[in-house]
Image (tube, rainbow, N blue to C red; front, side, top):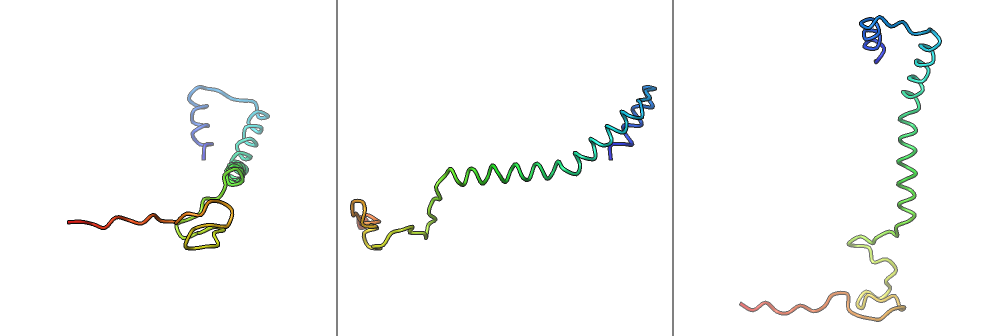
Length: 92
């Protein structure tokens, strides 16, 4: 992928690198192409997992968590209060 343009640049500037250096550059390029995406994926996964462990899961709109009394929204531990406050009637 990059070999063609690299050869063109080297030809334009009359640069002939040592074959050992060419082999080392080819090895590093191949390793980056093979292992780069893998390292990126693993890094993102570990960051995501660490973030999930650090933050407690927020309940969704239909998830009542550990609420046992549906009318008061209480699990028997804290103060008991209605889940929703009564609303005022709409007056025209």
